[in-house]
Length: 386
Image (tube, rainbow, N blue to C red; front, side, top):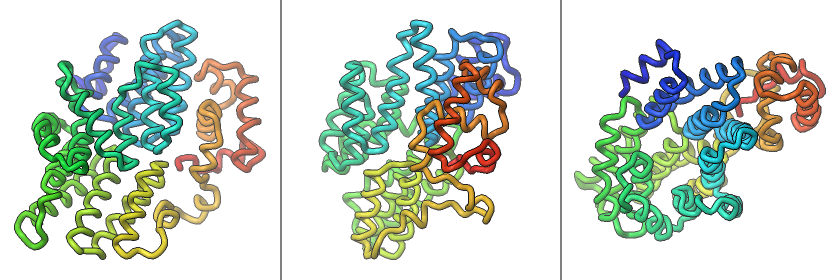
């Protein structure tokens, strides 16, 4: 399967179905970079050829890839655009997938009210795994375990989407005091991760193996050494892969283990990194969990603001845009300003997004004050990757 994806990336097929099948396979394999690359290329073809009918599925694939890699603002903007095309072309089949992306973003942020609002409008999303992730972030482990067990135990629980929630099930089970309910399903995820050709599944698998011994560890024995080796190996694998949210979760769990092993100095180092990573991603409840652990490890004050800043040179620092500022933009404003900042003309932007030139001008007019600028020249000097 990996060879199919690699061949499609190197030698694109003439068939849209074949190209999208390759993107689907890449998603099953957990190859986020391939998903994004294939979906972006296909979206560009659709825009160039005017094949609007294919865009909802193509953009949904792109949004899923962006979500997986922690590009939540881009994922939301892409999903909103795809929903517009889905409504215009009356393609109802893709709408639930697109709303699931918005639900996942809200769950990562710990925004329970928005999660409930999305589910209230779309009843089929009421049992989505995102609610279990929300509960994990809020420390509601029993609720998360109940939801996840229902997903993996159902007759269709062998499908890839169900296998991918097993790490959440493992964490919920351990936290709820029922580790055996996680270890029962863990071999399925470990087998999938072993077959994966990318790093992040292997990192999460190592985290799960460490976590299942979490509660029974006794400071000073060989088990402690084994657990630390697994966590440390997971950190190394995360450094090679995508999915910063999973990276931060591993750091948080490792830091918690170090603190409970009374290695408070080591714990603070790992937990600061987790807090900073969660803060950059806008994962509010998870960042607060990291801060709570930091305080328990003897930290005075919080380091989120300092650690969230990525080292940059003086020119970039002067023009960097804070995440909160980008949050003020609507999804379509964000799309327009990103293209404009990259040098695209209003006419080019209009063609790519299937908008009128006047609409593009309107979005820029609305976005400039939010960004604290007054011209396109200033826009092109901004750092918009916050």
